[in-house]
Length: 593
Image: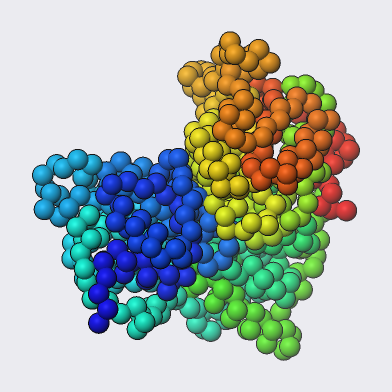
């Protein structure tokens, strides 16, 4: 039996499980693992500037391409605690990432050793498994179990903590006999699918709600095929955005309190039946169940049994992987079509399309003011970027307005930390997407505060030549929190503006993002008017090609803009003026031409 260090067995298992890329920050307690990575040379490594950022890079890497599992590495103590935000974000959105930490030697774990913390106990609530390996011979099997868990059922993250002496110990392990464990995914039964279709066909105005589980299962093609077969409109959730193209005739728009379309909410309120697939009924999609559920019946399909009935009780719950369920829905629907059992919903589809035409233009985008209103920025982005553009964003008014005004046409082309929404996520996640797909057109979208949280990671993009465009909409405010504070009649501790003695060109806005980006080795442009945006994007594309670094486009916004949102899907406040005619919102109408 071959002998090797336990750390080497972990690296060999990772290779067998398909890992070719890692992100991380080395340190004394994880150096034995890094030594084995260096010796093998089979797993590439990107050096982050912050361990939290390494986990977000791993997230972006996983989210970008079906089948990927991002890996984040860190030393003992604060490296593990820094990883918690990324583990939470991944867990909340069902994203598999593997975090590996070093640890003090086993004999010192109870002695309050330097940088020794029980990270496994701390991380357990936000992982599928978190464990400190105490026996060297168990290392390869713990890694095997980690990959099995990350891929089985509802996907999610794992943390493995490796004491220094465990990594260094010699064990016997034969990698040539190693095989990954079979992945478990629950599957809908024919009886369940027939019952669901019977309920759907008994309705007059059905909808399909397509969640992030469809993206995770790589089932977008099956979703579109099923929707077209039965002729039923689709409402994607924020995490399912892109599962069906925005300009598909059956796309009814997004529903929700924030990242939603007026016509999406209106169509939901007009429906009488909803088939939810791979979604969580998240509160920013539903609002209160009392309003969301009134007058309609529900079938819920989800891979995680405990999601069924968590928010409200559907009339039928089906525990299934989204792709497996959709394949069976397609099979049964085709049989029913041949025997004339499918209803004609063309009139309902036309009603949803008419609603789109009537309501799409009401959110005005065609502003000519300077400083810019954000609505005009998104109109310019729609005009400048094509259908292949992949947007990366996390939270704030910038992301909410992006959800209302941008358009997504492909799965995994809206990459968003949906439930956790950690500030700073956007930049490292975009770098992870770039590593996963060197050819993709990537546009990150941040407000100024999100951008500042992990701004040092721009240096990673420069060092490792990871070009992408980062649009920073800058109003020098914690804009979403300021808008929320309206309910408390205050504007308190949310202003980021100050007099910058080194940059008079940004007086009134504080931080000079252009100088910081340039100082970190990237390129940057500042724009003030809508006529400057398209040339700036063209310049950014040229710089990316020439220098192979991230390019920041900072757009100076008016200081205060309230973005449409509300407390219920039937009570969304439109703070800005409505369009007076359809020429005021040309980008919304472009989808309807």
